[in-house]
Length: 446
Image (cartoon, rainbow, N blue to C red; front, top):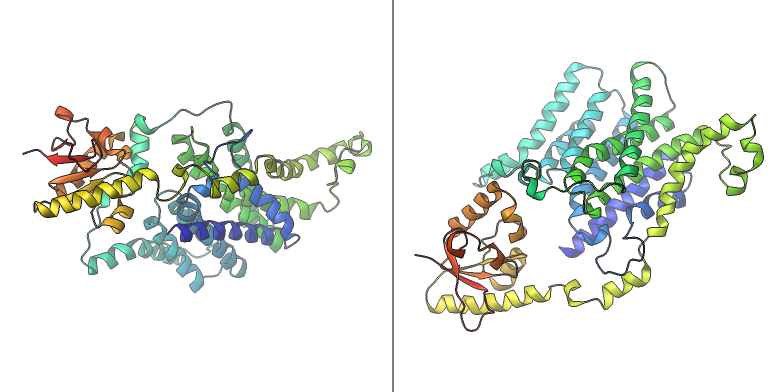
């Protein structure tokens, strides 16, 4: 799974580079790389000395949240370029998979599916074709529940978007926006891309301000990825204290920026891109001042991603992180190894006394694969359980549904014994047993 997630990250970046390269009319693959990779790869700056890594170390982010949207964007640009206003089977299939993305991830992947369907409909001339696209989108949403129904598996519909609603309905998981900070640069940047690209696209679509096929591809690319970044920005607003939350946006944002740069570069082939020519006195004379000021916009889009090279991951830091970092940056982590040892001892104990046993801690699925003990924690970590009344209810219901006699506790587990009389969900109390770490096993209260 770790290898597959890492490969997914690389595929997402490669798709981004290829889309930008195509939007710039295949001028320079090197330029596409320089406009995409540095901005996406920003690390902590300045004086980074820790081993926490970049956005690529957060394995659930680019592969699950961004990769589905990159794939949808790649095929959307292809089908619209070939058959802009005409109905085609490829558009029906694409809208179907756009609906299916709701089951992959209920934030960025879902938004990418909605935006993809919007752009397909945007170029539809016939009302019947629009209805057909919407039906295909709805079938994509329904396909997964139907497949599970025939397998006899029920879906808990109240879990859909569960965490998103917890962030918006509970102040405990929200954080204030830190200003001054990156938000003062990124949000205006995204808004500018959205406004510029939509203005050109709407003019081309409805007001006969036609642009060439190459320009349309560049502007359509800018519009898709900038709108995706703008709507997805709400995710950052709820977790704004963590730079990693905002950095999820940087891959689609860099693709949108590179595409607009390609559009502007095509229109003005005589742009003086060397530093000497750009700053030369003749460019800023009274005769050329308006022309030179016009160059500033593409210059800014060019300079911001390239300036992020300053915050590019330090190779020496990354090499040490991968080869000789602290045990907490290895897998499995030391505390998980201790939990596996406790779980195996607890399993033998439970078998000898004919009792049932489960695990309550982080990495429960991994521990189940290695020890055979099921997890009573429905969340990624026990720390997710106390974020709201709803999350407490859902977490306790999972425990009640299994109701084991014994629960082995991971490192985070003991901190959740905050209910009446220091219990977990008013049903379990910690009891130390020789052979298991202190405060790492709980028994059911009669």
